[in-house]
Length: 291
Length: 291
Image (cartoon, rainbow over the protein chains, first blue to last red):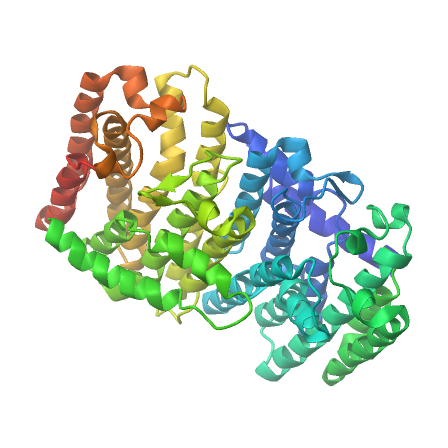
């Protein structure tokens, strides 16, 4: 699986490189800051999920390419802004200085803004064979990234920090903060490939469960991983009083939940038969990962 | 003219209110912060320009409504982020506490992000009669707001602060920072109304010249206006070492430039004949304004 992912990452990165080409103009620093975080070694999970969902639904890389790059830009902008001093105040990300440490807080804010905006520029750049399908995908995309999606999740997460919260509150935060974009990745893959409504619903179910399993694994890794694997200090979530599954349920119960949700995710894809093979293997790979 | 503008503002605000309805969910604070700045007494210049351009090109309020609201959201997000401590560090805007003073820096960053994202959600919400026209308008919108538009202008402006720059540098900053969105407002009005390419070009010329005249008037008002009129201390630009037309050319030459550019703006609309009457009157009104 690792080799298959690296092949895909290579293709995704070539497209990202094209869309984020530095122009030799007075604001070139903003492109440098955007590229710094986009090319900081991301796993391209969301683009790969979108791409493979599209393939499963009869599409191809060409049908999702702009949206796949755009979702990575949105993911990256969210990391840049989350790391800011006024937010999580992180100096390191994947073992490298965060954007505001490298470029200053002003440029980091603007680089995030520019990536978010570039995402919508990229998805509207092409003449689409089916423009109304593109408009629908843009809407899913924006809704997932905004006040009732990712930004909403970060808002609730900030308010919850340092407080004792219930498991349902934690689930709500993750559903929005990380879950919404993972769902959008898969749903957009299906929409742009021209999937039937029933297929879009199945893909959405898959992505919702996968997102939960993925997040719980993240929480477990923060406690059990090594600093080299994680690219950040072990236990940094616990230290900053972040609410995590491990804190609320313990390691053992968390491991069990990973299994439950990854099984649910795979089951949701059964209607696709053999075409779901890659995404099912990817699910297994993601929930047993060590970084 | 004032009464005609107030009538339009009323209609625009009703639509903005609808799109920014507070939902009773755990992240409702983010909607409150978004609304706080959107409803802080903006003049709705960009929505009105878009609307009237659409009407001039044969469209109506209904054809531009989502884009008109979206451009005000983008304008507002840019003000929220520009006011942040890491950027211009302003405590007051239109005589009221800025977003981060009222809600804290973390929520202000997120409210800006959410408004920018909401803008793209709103413009992709409807089923458009002509979806490829909508995709084109979305692309103009994103390009104008991003790294080679508004965000790029803010980037160059921050780098220039406190330095001696040439008039051409100042013009470059304004072309991007405030000009790009004003041009997008008018061009999108024309595109969504189904204007011919030649008309779109004329509208773009109009908006480019109007943007310059408007910005020079802004710079002059910072020196000659009263605090009550401006909603901020007089001379605050000069104090913060902002580069302005007045600083580089003096008041007299700046006044002359306002006339030159507003005349060019109006001349660009001559191909529309009598249909350009409102926008020409609006141009005169905007460049003789006192706030």
